Image: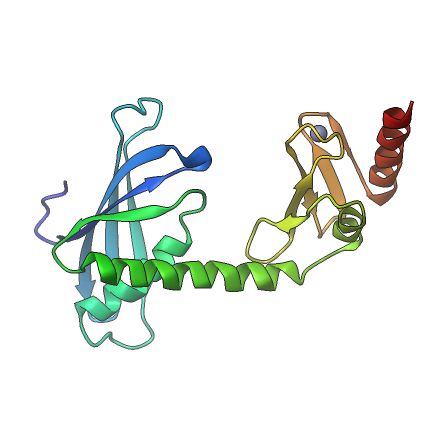
Length: 197
Ligand SMILES: [Zn+2]
């Protein structure tokens, strides 16, 4: 753990990654001066997960107004931080500052934030995502702005195709297929015909 005088340890969480694999613990330390918060996150990979690397990141957050106290600042940081973890889910390990119940409250707020972002991104549809909808390929946005989507690959081999609503193009790295709306519709019809014969 970082023992620098400028940073104070405040929380440890563990998390799973993609496929629900336990990734390891992250220790968080903070330094707050007026409205500027710096947080160091030190990830220690689970011993069984030798292919994951330990890593250290610094997060910088500037508040519009000076936070009332350290807890207020760290609560705001944690909700945002937990909402950005991506795959898997985190859980409470230990903390000098927050109880497990308080951590779970922040986690719920983070999940709410993720849902709100998803709902907003889902509005940014395009002709391509609508084609995917029509063919029941379950299109889903995969970034906050909804410019990048994924959908089930028409090959039905259990992977995803990537869709850009900006360029209205799609691609599947596994099947080595890509194109625009026409190419997708043609390919789907081709697959349908094959399955009938
Ligand atoms: Zn494919």
